[in-house]
Length: 294
Ligand SMILES: NC(=O)c1ccc[n+]([C@@H]2O[C@H](COP(=O)([O-])OP(=O)(O)OC[C@H]3O[C@@H](n4cnc5c(N)ncnc54)[C@H](O)[C@@H]3O)[C@@H](O)[C@H]2O)c1
Image 1 (cartoon, rainbow, N blue to C red):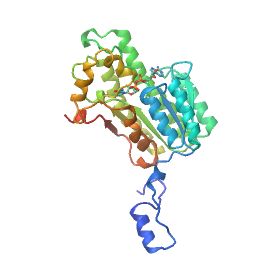
Image 2 (image 1 turned 45 degrees about the vertical axis):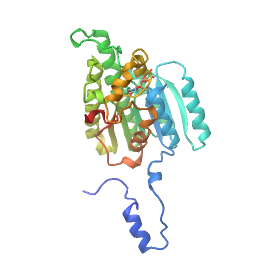
Image 3 (image 1 turned 30 degrees about the horizontal axis):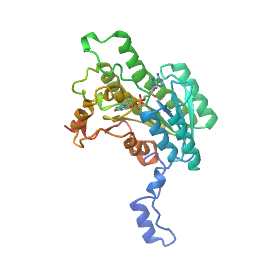
Image 4 (image 1 turned 135 degrees about the horizontal axis):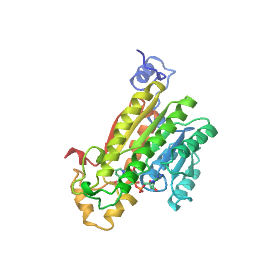
């Protein structure tokens, strides 16, 4: 069966056309494939850390981004990014929205309103997450309340965000890309850390992306997960700032010999959000400095 996507004259076909047709001028197409001009995105966990970095890269590519998080007011880093986006003068905009991803009714309502107001929704990044106690708990003693909280935010919250976005993408009929932020901890166990709840929640996210991708492919809605390795953010600072020796242990656990910077997820987010990845769905993309390879 022929692919459903629009056929564009790009790559080798463009080169062949340019050779036969002197009026067809050679032009690089790859940067255009990454453009998010006029696209609308929802990102959760956008107050800071990876979610804010991911929001900003979408703005740099031209998108209007709605960044969700718990606090009533945006962070000063968020407002710096909103101001930066405005000054890019590329049509992008970064807007803060207070919202708890564990509240299915509220998240679904807010996402529906954004899509209705913009007339579309193209990109969803579900990055809101919690680790639980940085020191963890032996699995046989893991406290019920914390277990439920970690799974509620990391698994239920990601699902509520993704399902609301999928519904809006289908309603407005403009296809879309849903990116669930999992973790390499969804596929391996961090040596020396008793994080069963976190690891379990992230495994669920990887499987959630595969399952949703299979259901939504017919509507041209793609669903993938990104599994970062160790990156310094507020989440990992809870451990690294108290036990600085941990940073060297993590660095030693991957072939690149260091932990990651938040900006090192920009490329993969740009690729998965945009038309540069139109044939990628149901995949988990590991960005771990090679931690998983050892
Ligand atoms: N930093 C890492 O090394 C690393 C590695 C793998 C995966 N991740 C994942 O990346 C994502 C972002 O984490 P980060 O490292 O930037 O940490 P972070 O703590 O800076 O960001 C997480 C954000 O999620 C928000 N959040 C928590 N509960 C929420 C809720 N109920 N509703 C809305 N927002 C909520 C927090 O307020 C926070 O701003 C998380 O899903 C995390 O599990 C991080």
